[in-house]
Length: 182
Image 1: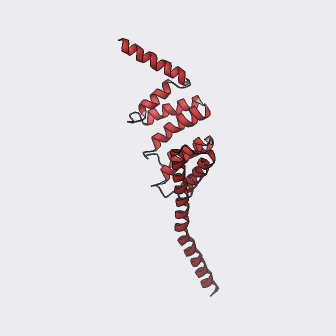
Image 2: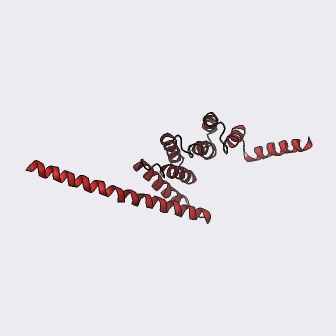
Image 3: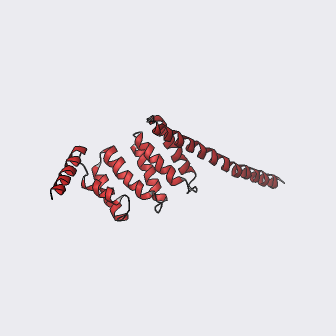
């Protein structure tokens, strides 16, 4: 008799646990989506601050890490978390979100954009680490040599790696001037 009560009690606990997973997941997802919407509205008004960006990034990343089976939203949640962490100056967290996205979803359409973002916005412009940025640009060109939107951007970034904006502008203007003379 004691065993039946224990088994019944365990079954009841398991049933409660399983039914509570759905609402908890939905609440967490709604919270993350609400913060994502709030950051988008703040960006439109040019009012996004580091605190809101970081809070939203944490919520999006937390959901993606705790509910890995949600492959429909998780790549975009991780991508947005990466961007918001970068915007709020939390580069190590941005790198972690980027690495998670690229590892878990290597074939997702956001993966090449994540690799470029990681090279350009995090390493090159955020951390000033041109060595890692250059390595990632070269990795990008190996993995996505004919990417319709990013290949030319990556080639440009690699060509001008480590140069400040005025040097790049001077080079472009000289090239344009030489082309117009011919």
